[in-house]
Length: 390
Image 1 (cartoon, one colour):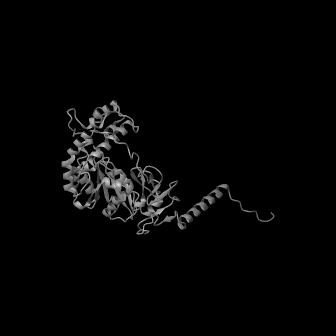
Image 2 (cartoon, one colour):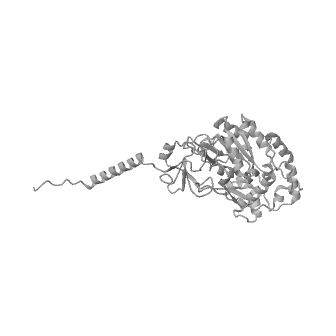
Image 3 (cartoon, helix red, strand yellow):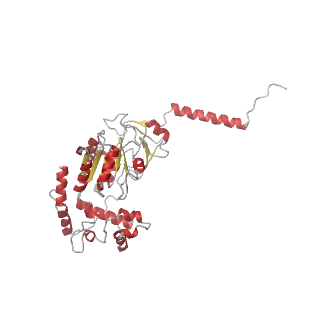
């Protein structure tokens, strides 16, 4: 034979060599190259440090997300909902865990709890999530779900849960305190009960009709009124949400009995008796200083002031300032150069129904003694308690 024959590899051997080479390259990239660009002090906070804020771009972790912060990748969408957890590799690197929530937000419908939660979630050191407490739901039976509802956090972040409806049951408040610890903090935001009732009526009619601004029909009113007879229908969940509401064609008809007196059994009215909710929370909290009561009117007019108060209460670093909000009609909406989900919540600015002034005065007089008790419990001078003018 002339010369040595060159050694040839079989196709299978070549395939294995290529796989091994690719695996080695990926291992080297993962070991020595940064998987994402870390942007410290992205929020331009004077008091921020690498330990306080850890944010990044979409490279390597977002898979199409526009911004990555801590354990979540955020994209444009409904505030507080447009996010997903980063992959397991980065969860381990960042120390992401479902740690017990440091605080819970509670409140009555249409008082601003969801807006407050979504805005606080923009704080680099806070991760917030919503966990509605249903009327017929046992926390003991749903402990696993309760754990899953707690958002993932890094060691530098705190978890915050919005537990809508928790204040209606003292037993559940006690369970939360027992589970999260005696140092858990509670935030309660309240609104002028008369304005709340009007807003709630508009919200209910809009939800039931499914189309904003569509006139409430008699059939829908009967569906709400006869919710018990419709529990087996496909609309069970929707009907259950509006349990104990009596909704008719006008606000006046929905809160007045046939004799012209207020129907105190209607949730449109009963949900505005705030003092009983505050008392039930205080009865279950070991330390009354762990309850922060906020005024929804102040939050609407100067949201950064309310959020700064919350920051001090939660003992987190200062972040929110006037520049983080933009005026949109009569409301302020959060804005962020980093978080694409920062915007007003849907349904902001619904037109309120036109209501007879005599009915408004009757409703305001009804709430007067309860508002005085609320003042005695909280020591707060809500503008809708003193000098109420209609």
